[in-house]
Image 1 (cartoon, rainbow, N blue to C red):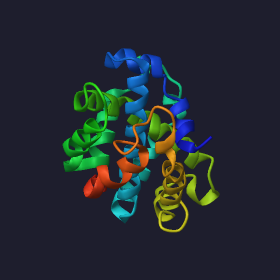
Image 2: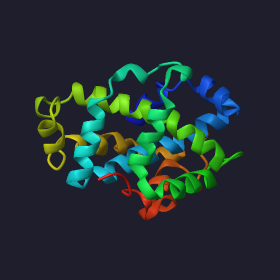
Image 3: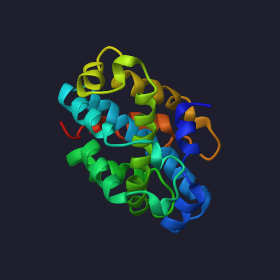
Length: 196
């Protein structure tokens, strides 16, 4: 199972679908597009030292409690802040691009979905950082300092490593919103517009 699939397994999909007012299949398809976009935005930001430090600091404020938590226990206000920090001024453009690759309600659905997913993604990464190498476990210097050569950037890269061939998975539209498309042509140069 890829790491993105592991994150997906922590999303209470039936509850997400109910919160969004869509069926499970639609919720899952949108989630499969949104998670790699969030990770891709974080990875792009982590290439910049200030962005990496900001993300590392945010990760220290999250534990694994959002993993598998009921939707009504997920802090969507925190989620909205995470989304803003990840995508910055590009947030609306990212939502629009993801919405165009999502059936049904499109951008409206994505704008509600991202703040639900962002704390789950952060919780997954926080837990991964805590269980990672000793140099990437605690403290700004350990997390942020390892971005270039084995830390946050490498962790995000390894998690995203499962995104490349994922557009052939069941339920993903080929050529219009698969994970590879989202990270490549669909979002293009929008990633990396977040907080530094």
